[in-house]
Length: 525
Image (cartoon, rainbow, N blue to C red):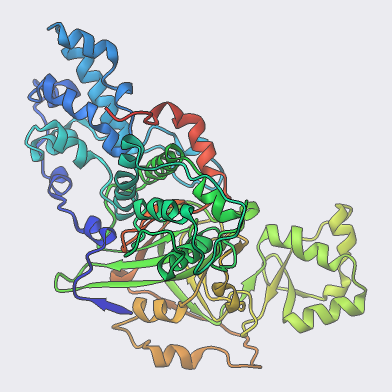
């Protein structure tokens, strides 16, 4: 666990923004029955001119101003017409889209476990309006998500978008020769200029492929999920990355901002966030005002055919030496297909070598795996109400540590028996659960101030060659039960100031664009 006295990354700054308006929501008196409160009354003290200014600047949150402050409204406004009712309606629509998103998450895909966020009541909105000083611009910023991933993505958007508007993001003509360390070529200065816009730092913006460019290219190749070689090859993936237009990068950032509007406005003082697109884990703990605690490491998460879900959950239990009960999808698509072509002797060897067992559905009766007609099960001719379960040992698919969540779709965090996978760029490899590079660090954190210190935890797990018959379940103290947020963000500005982009192999972005495309900004007002 890293203890940070001062962590200036936006991802931390956003998580500790003032929450005055939201804290007051529970203390506001109910409106008098004879004075019913509606939304128009709530915003009555905000001038039309102020609302106009806010709507025209809504591009700063990835919204298209012309969807709210339309050309028709502008024309009527310039002529002095009374447009208050229409302005109110447009302003409230903008606040709704900003607060909860314009896209219903349930329309995007089965892996999105959020429902459409309900907008604030008139009473709640009044509290926020008052806390914002009846200022439309302040209100807009306050209604936008304050959670750290949204703010980090937004900072990336604000870094890239001006380059589209002022033309500094220029097209780079590809060359037909490979570019590598010490190469000199006129196009290299163009590449450096592009990467500098994204936040990569260069001392010399010349035409030499130097060490700083090598580091940037290597970083990009990791994001592209390819083995880094530090070379820009003709028609290769790095060239494809450099050929993406500025407008498409802006869209990518806008879509990711939309995803974070589905999440709670604020995250807790202590939370876990897993970026599924970048396969990265971060734990933030700002509960102590004297210092912030940060833990970060790599993950392995769901492949495109078995996506890890976008969700909010809670980690409530640590399990040492877990059993692994094969999930239904893996059972039917993987295990049955493996077993159906084996002889009885091979089936026996398969189960013994992997320490698998077959059990009845209620786990009351153990069944001989050679008695199962695996081919018939595969073809649907027979049906067995059974589980395959793996005994705890170092080769267990869950490793030796599991973190139980509360969801009902068998997704959890865990160790792994394939630790080598954390060293490869392509880590969308699991069947949906999230494998952790440093599970013992997380277990130690969650169980601190209990009898389970790091030494005790490590002493309890299976050793090489040891097969266990019992797991140890340790409830996490209520005070340390930590929210877990998972999201598939393909773009974000990191704490080093670099805006990183990865490919959308889950297909979430295109699904969102089908509903969100009218919101994309084509030209900044």
